[in-house]
Amino acid sequence: DGGITQSPKYLFRKEGQNVTLSCEQNLNHDAMYWYRQDPGQGLRLIYYSQIVNDFQKGDIAEGYSVSREKKESFPLTVTSAQKNPTAFYLCASSIGPSVGELFFGEGSRLTVL
Amino acid sequence: AQSVTQLDSQVPVFEEAPVELRCNYSSSVSVYLFWYVQYPNQGLQLLLKYLSGSTLVKGINGFEAEFNKSQTSFHLRKPSVHISDTAEYFCAVTHGAGSYQLTFGKGTKLSVIP
Image 1: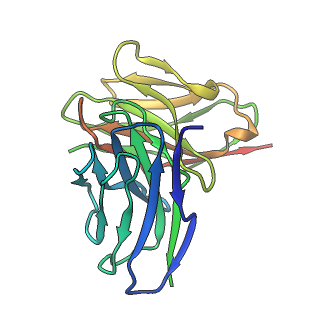
Image 2: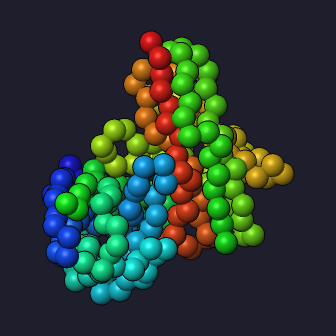
């Protein structure tokens, strides 16, 4: 079945450590996204990528980094510079611009101890 | 700049009763509007979308929404809810045609009471 796979589902990290969240899609979609979700705050866009080897900052990119070396993969690194990294992270993809449908993974919950 | 306001953070409703989840938007350009649903500890799934044409849009699971340009609203409705509709619902708007950025509202938690 086609879809988006995020791993790990749950992740614990000590302060000062970088952590990388994986996102893989087999939908053959060009565009991929990372969102952060906090309780009562909705979804906020961290980074997005329209094509391989290209990505743009979203509304809250500080303290995060991404790469897009393959069409299928869009990993997110939460760096130690991110002040409040504990959150639920969602990866999504779309065929093209967002007037189409976004397909979401099941999310990764990061907790900083 | 765009914004989306979901007027109710929580909506409790009895099973088989009708429900309306409210969404208002602000935008200076043409808008494309969406409703997504999120079940606990899962990703989001598209319920319905308005791009153009008829202002009444029908989606999955018996939901529908009406685009009202004069009131800048896109309220979601269902005539009879089921326990399985318990979830969080998000309204979203694009920045315009060709945009890769969706602006989401803060969500409305729908609780269906048996």
